[in-house]
Length: 529
Image 1 (cartoon, one colour):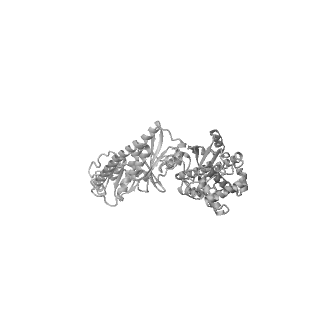
Image 2 (cartoon, helix red, strand yellow; image 1 turned 90 degrees about the vertical axis):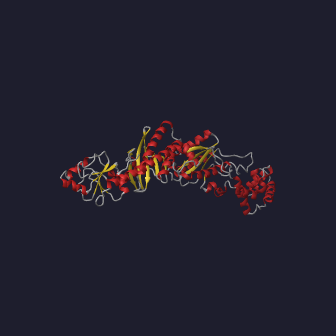
Image 3 (spheres, helix red, strand yellow; image 1 turned 60 degrees about the vertical axis):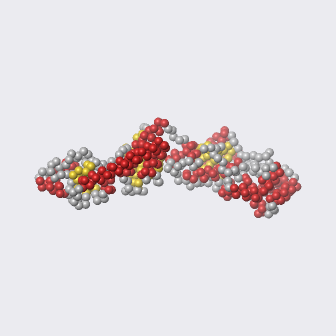
């Protein structure tokens, strides 16, 4: 159980003022443990034999009685106290003129009450009793959490019980797990100040205080810290940290024998699929080399041939990004910084110019004749930057949308960015309708019978797409390989079936919009979990 210290006493009773002798810092004095309170008596033996860490109470009245009796000199008595293994001397202002060795002094404002010894001992007893109850309850809760969820669950249970933020870091300062509302990691330079468990170190920070201890487990060192507001760290916090440190040491030792670190690719997949909790996000971010609040770009890559995919990835990937890719369905997903994304995009577009010298087909495959349908051998798409790692599932959805458009043949290039209108065109605005019933309803209301499954409907749909792309019946005829009169007949049928005048720019715009809605990929596909 956590020891009671001078800091606790000074917090319980603000009347005490600490005076430190030269060579003893206030911080060190406040960390001294307290066992009990005893009083100096006016007759020999002046002091019961101290067992260690006692508070020795010396009143002015007792000191004057000792001096008046001639049984002892004040200096001799104080020298004896200075050599005793006691925590501090409790006395009155102006009673002792010189420091008493290295002994801290607690000054009480005015004459010491006659019942101060019993008052202090009663206070110490009550506080120890409260700590014992807390220790019993917390030990039970932490043990239950350790059995059900390991380190993460243990810190969550401790944070809930203490209403504090708690963090566990490795020897290099990397976050292993955290819990609470504001789990800010300890700077690596501050970790060197930690004391080995069960001892703790209280560090003052700009936003409050940090109680820190070092744990040796499984041949490695870890650091456990508890965060509190300035001046609010209590004996309860030290107890929580002490119990938690012992259990964490046991769990870490067990993990070092049996567990392996989660692969980076799995951590990336967990982020993309929204499976990372708020408390473990800083740890995951540190593992993959990104800041939790750093802008991130999600990219998707796929190729028809595995051998070709490996070759392309070797040519375009930044070395720093190789640890942040993961298989996701039939694609490879990446988490990139904005700088990495720019470099990768430039390499990929250079590769496109050499691999795909021109558009393979005038019409998207859905509207082209089956005999000429063609899709690119590979593609690479980038979502727009998301502001932080918690938002990467949003980026994944945008990237999937672009990937689906390329697979549908609705985009002109196998490399596309969501936030580049030259790549996405109006699809960037239609993204809000992706997967919505109103998109299908709008397309159906505009195209009507042209969306039928029969060959005639498909023929008319291809003709409409070619007309909207080419702009004239002659060019449509040349592209589709049919007579100009056949084109004119089909366009007349399209006007009749849709109720739209193809000579009216507004109607053509609506029909073009309908074709784009039809070109959007199916609703977001499931990804292998």
